[in-house]
Amino acid sequence: MALPPRPSLFGVAMCLLGAVVCLASARHGWRTAALVRAAAVDHLDGVADGTLVRVSGTVRDAERTLTAPLSGTDCVACRAVVEERRPGALLLPTYVTIHDPAESTAFDVRTPHATVSVAEPTRTVALDSTVVATVGPDADPPDRIARYERRADDIGAGWRLLPDSLAPVARALSLGARRYAERRLSPGDDVTVVGRVRTGRLDPLVVSTVSPTGTLARLSRTSVAGFAIGAFAILIGGALLVVG
Image (cartoon, rainbow, N blue to C red; front, side, top):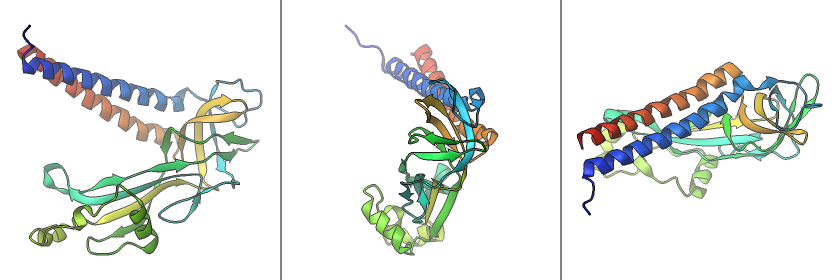
């Protein structure tokens, strides 16, 4: 039995890949739309389990907090982001994310009328970014950041260690410079949490320090970009199937 021609196989693969990307983007978009669908409340008394709600208030001082790894700040959610200046599209230098782990813990939100317990956020967290340090390609980071980099398995020398023949050009373009930032949520911060009520506490779908409108705009960009990439892959795959 003869195998299908290679363009047809590649076309099917591209269509499948595009469909998966579109479905993932649709799921992300539906989760983002929860900001609009959720009912705004300031307490959970009398709210039935499973109800989608939106709570806005201030993060209370927590019994258990995390320590942000780059700045040492107390927080309840944090994403440490390390970016390195590298050649990007068309070989133009740009900052590329090389490390961005996240961690979080349960916390309470104080509203004008109640205190709402929020389970540990494990899904979409949209927090403002705070730059902790920017370090040139030949400079050493602050001690705390240097220790963190040594402990992290996925942060290598990158473009900071280059052959002597490339070093002058790379340094002229600041290739290898690193920017260290944190997206964190700390006690005292204003926050909006969207989630479902589970046994008197909130199981979060979206946690954001931005206004609901700003969060919707920020998260929608990810869904739109995913749809565009998925649709493009499907178009390419369809074209290959036609010509194949």
